[in-house]
Structure formats: structure tokens, C-alpha cells
Length: 376
Image (cartoon, rainbow, N blue to C red; front, side, top):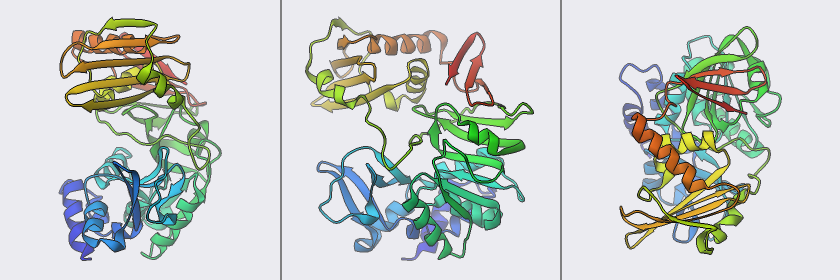
């Protein structure tokens, strides 16, 4: 594989001409960090081995999408053809443009010590080690295999940053000028603030949202910043190889049951997860909602379920008003429509650009104008 050609093209797409990260992207043979991956299709998650299809390997490794490397804790590196794991993705090789975006938000300069939370395939770690020097980079992940694989693969490139297999919600190794996380959190773990040096900067996403939180450490041990006028989404932190069981068992009920409330909705059915601002605001207001969406022969159906037993189903043909079934302690579709109405009336939602204060124990307080929210 002429990886230098692919990496140079990726660097041109993923960075600005004057970006201090361009050389690192161009100098990283990203395919070596992604020998195998999963793709989701009609048969479920299917294994792909790069060596079996070099052209596809180059397209995926140096392309514009993230590549899933572990599903339900089942690593593609350990899989055989014919394996079809179930569950949620638990690791990926994040697309380069998103990695660079998070690094740029970190405002990282030469001499800064960086903690990379969420090693994954090791792409961010490689870029940081190339630009800052390995001695200035530490990378952690909850999955020991990911840590070991990234350590070995980066060592083969002559890069030797520090690695540790730890639960990122607990104690972290060392102290650092910058923390950049490619896993979502809610709230910010207190250990992150403890590991951040005086005047240090934190960059992360809020779990189950597309919100990027950037904040500078304050003298009281907390942090102060804002929600960037930008967006990103990552898997959330976990404590072991897989995520705990959520409210997914409610989906059969949501698909088939008659609701306690049956009404006609005000707005067309859409995939809420694609409306990032609406999804984020609803997740801040009503944490714990999970979503599903399907479209068949022009008929759209959206499902919302919550760990408290609430569920909603909205079905409509294209842009017609939907029939909405709801049950449980909360009316989830009603909450979603309330958010959509607010967005129309106010010309947007008060998320991007909101001020953010993080207490020393990690609770996030957001505010913009008269609106405020607490994430704990």
C-alpha cells in the first residue's frame, strides 16, 4: 500500500493548510492501527480484514468515517469470518478530522503534557506523540487489549508514549497541562480535574449529546469554560469490556403495544439523532432516553425508550403528522415536541455557546441568558 499518498490526501482533507497537526496526520500510517474492523449491514456486524482487501483497507483507514473495531467487547482483531457479534460498539478508529478537531480545541503547544482519554485504535495518541514528542503524551483506556495493541503498534512506528489500562472515571496517572477525551462523560469525573494542572485545559464531550465542553481549570479545583459552537459525538465511558444493559428491552413493547396515550403529533417524524441540537437539548433535559428509527416504503417510525419504563412510538408517511403512542411515567414524544417548538419559537436552542462551570466534584452547570441546566 502506498500509504504515504493516502495519508497526505487525508491530511489535506482533515486539516487546514496552516494547521500544526497536518504533518502528524500525513506522517501516520493509519492503516497499521486498523488491521481489522466491523461493518454493520443486513447480516449484522460483519468482520473485515484489511490484508484481504487492500483497496478497501486504504479507503476505510484513510477515509471520512470512523471504523468500529470492537462490538459488545468482541474485538475485530480476535474474530473469525462468520462471527456476528451483538451489542453496542465499544471501540473505534475515529475519523482523522474529528480527532484533529478535538486536539485543536485543546490549544496544545510544544512543551505541554497531554493526557489522551480513550486510546481506542491509537490515532490521536500517534498524532500527539509525533507533534509533541512521546515523552509528553499519556494515553488511557478501560480495555487492556486496546492499550496493549496501541502500545505495540505505535512502538513499531518509533513512538513510545505512556499507556495505562484504567477506568477513566477513577484515578488517573500523573498530572497534565491538557486533557483531551474522545469518550463522552456525564458528569466530568472528579479525577480528571485532579489530574489537570493549574491553568490546564479540558476538552470532552457530554455523554449522549453532541456537545463539546472546553474549560480551563480554576483555583478552586473546578473548571470554567463553555460549550463550543461545534459538535462531536463519542461513545460514553464504561467500567469494563461492555456497556451495562439499558432500556433496550422496552423496544419490543414500543414497537407493538398500544399506548396509554394515543394522539396526533405536531411535527413530522425524523431521526432525532440526526438533529444534533434537538437531540442534545432533549438529552440534557431528560437524561436516559434511547432512540431508534426506521423508514420502510415511505413510512417513518421513531421510537423513544427510557430506563424508567417510559416509551413512545410515532409513525407517519413522510411529512404527515404522526400517530403517537406513549406510555410510562413520562410522555417522551411530548417532551421532544416541546423542545422542537422552543427551537422554532426562539430560532434555536440555548446550548451552543452556553457558559459552563464545572465544580471540583465534576457537576456541570450550563447557562445562557435565562436558561440554565445542571448535569450531574
